[in-house]
Length: 118
Image (cartoon, rainbow, N blue to C red; front, side, top):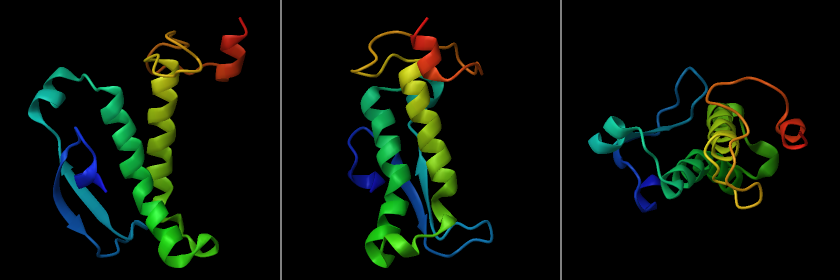
């Protein structure tokens, strides 16, 4: 999936060997040097991260069916939730919420809805 996403990191290695940590397979990416140095990420790149992270879970659903998916994608789901939350709350990358920062980076705080009501 990652090899097909525009403006995404290059696929370095793919492993389908199950790991003891619950991962049924892993894909290793080699980030662009300029991206690492600047720390700047486009909305397209971040959306690509969401797509790639959910690719393994979707593959399980396609192969095994919804009722037989495993916990293998749990880390991917955490990563997706974190990226999506930051896109909305910190970086103003939501068409519905708009160009506002609802929190500062790494700030805990209340549920997003409560902050919007203030």
